[in-house]
Length: 290
Image 1: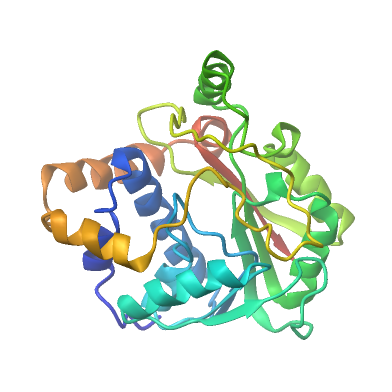
Image 2: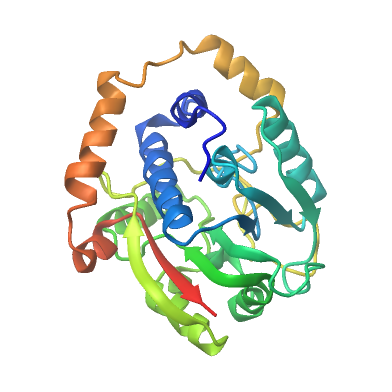
């Protein structure tokens, strides 16, 4: 891969969005993981399907691919989500194709991308098999799905927190937050399970206490504007993001905070056996191959 941007500098910039250490570590671990996939599998083109973003920052997850010169396409049923994503990508000097489309019947030709993937979307699909089948259709080789981890101890605490606070559960269908369920859906779609593992395993449970006020509904793949899987997390405008950047001092990549994240990832998360990591991590994943 050819690196065309300063990935460390960009990640530090994105970590200034005031979401806490947990999200910063998630981004770091996920970016490292996606870099390794791209290198190991010789990925040249990526479709994020759907591209939803994280904590109000649209189109964020696939930026690491673009940083390495990989062609990126972001698809989503919502025009607004992709408009917001385009503004953010442009502000960072990055480019990607943005396609508004249904999740069960996309306009992409068969085998258009080396990798088709999504992050924490599977548990929101009304019919995961239909969406995975479309992902398989779009991919030449690989399909990647990451989910939240129902087995993480923090998941129980977070569920209890919702009950105590009387807040609606907005994280998707619990029974779909299981890599074994993802594997079964892959198999039913004719995909072979190439790799089952997990990432984002910091030294704290996945509690995620940021909850909101709006009720969560299952994603209806036929309604093109209902695409934001976390409706309580409002999408930040590019003006809000710039304002946050201007108020936050730029952090050095060798700061104690970032050194801690990197050392933990390299010395603990990466060296933990897969069979243990998949239970302790915040996000298990399944990579399927056609």
